[in-house]
Every structure is written in structure tokens, then in C-alpha cells.
View 1 (spheres, rainbow, N blue to C red):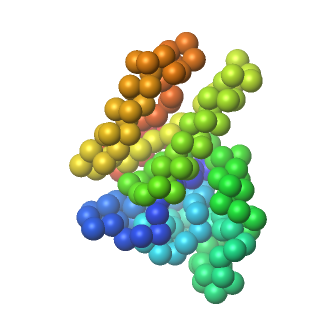
View 2 (view 1 turned 45 degrees about the horizontal axis):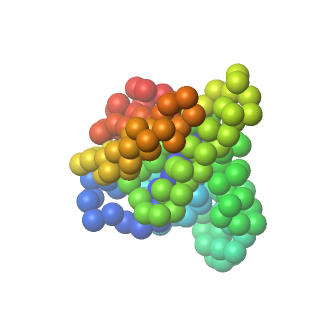
Length: 181
């Protein structure tokens, strides 16, 4: 299974999130899955990719070409895929992944989660046999709770076709996420 992990290149204030990111990468690799991610070796991106590599996993970095050659070449990964833009990076990750896990993050992480949700929704509209690709949120200390409440509110107001809430799962620890996969 190809698993995309959405996360930022920043280091969080809560060190336990960084520890969990490294463990997530490790567990993805130990499970025999391939990790796809945004390509940086900084912050949570570096933690998750580092954990997967340390466990002998396959790691694919999807990096926009506007990143400097120094950054691109500094990646110690199994494969680098160069794309022209951030939008192309999201398209590549969605097309080549079977599941998505979002760690706590910023606007870019939220954007990636929403892009998968929209892709799932449009796929279902275009093809009744379409199977959604799961979106899993790592939710320590309720990080994603307001987002999940907003999704529920959208459903209460009738903004999902046939009242169907998007396929999003939320877990408070990495063991639960791996068990769910």
C-alpha cells in the first residue's frame, strides 16, 4: 500500500508530535508500505521520512522544482519525484496513494487534506462504484477537533450529497492508526 503523510516542515512545540511522526514513518515501513510525502527533510517531514528510512522502508519524496537544488539533493530517500508546482504535488500524491494520514500541521497540511476530500467527493459523483481513499487524522490533544466539528456542521446544513459525511477517521495515537490501516 502507498501511504501519503501530510505534515509540515516545521518543528512543533509539542515534542511528542515529532516523536509520533518518527514512529508513524517507522510503522509504515515495518508494515511493508511505501511512504510518499512532500519532500522536505525538515520538521515533521524529516521525522516521518527519517523513521521510515531507519526501518528500511521505501520513501518517495515529491518535490516541486522551485525548491533549490541543494534542498532537492539533500534528500536521503528511495526516490525523488520532481513536479512543477504545489498543485502538481497534491495531484501526484492523490493519484499514487491508497490512503492518507495527516499529522498536526498548518495551512498546507489542511489544504492537502481538503484536496483529498474533494477528490473523493468528485470521484463518487462521477462514478457510483468509486471507492474513497481513506483520510486519517492524527489527533493528539484534540488538534483536529474543531475541523471535524466544522465538517459535521456542513453536513447538518445539507452540504454533502445525500447527507454523506466525508470518509475521515480521527485517532489519538499511532498504534490506532496502524491498526486501522
